Image (cartoon, rainbow, N blue to C red):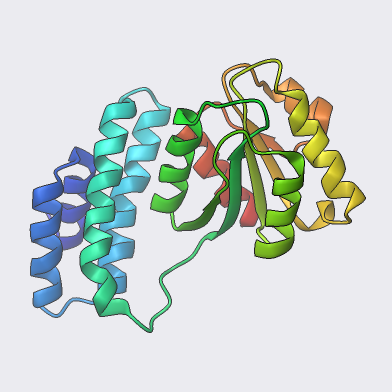
Length: 210
């Protein structure tokens, strides 16, 4: 097994101590830190996303892998200071007004960050105005909204309508998700995409900015 594929495999296994050890060894051996990230850490978490989507891995395994990958990134950060960490894009993410659930949102954020996205987490119970202000301030390529209650789903359309009123809609893609949300609902409210799970959300975001 190659040096980078070994690291990717350790991320897949969620073995944080070994990920940290091998990352340090590669760095001390003079390997390019950006190559360690791309061909080791990101390659590993990408495979995690694929297996999660196929039902071979579940949320606890995915969370362990993401934690292991982040630990490796932290070790490499000092070595890449001044360099551009590969960025896939920027996403503003929040659970809509009236909804206090954040597990699904946090999983999506974890997968997005692991996939190289910069994420602005607006938290839970986010009003329409806060989404708009965040888009104006951060200029993301994507706005992600989560809802776990049917009663809060209409807020997603309110955010999309507000983006249009503020002439921001053409500049951002809108992704929605959550247990009661469906692809049909996403189309009805004018969203650009719907993701049934965290791995799919990360994959869809890559397609949206690609």
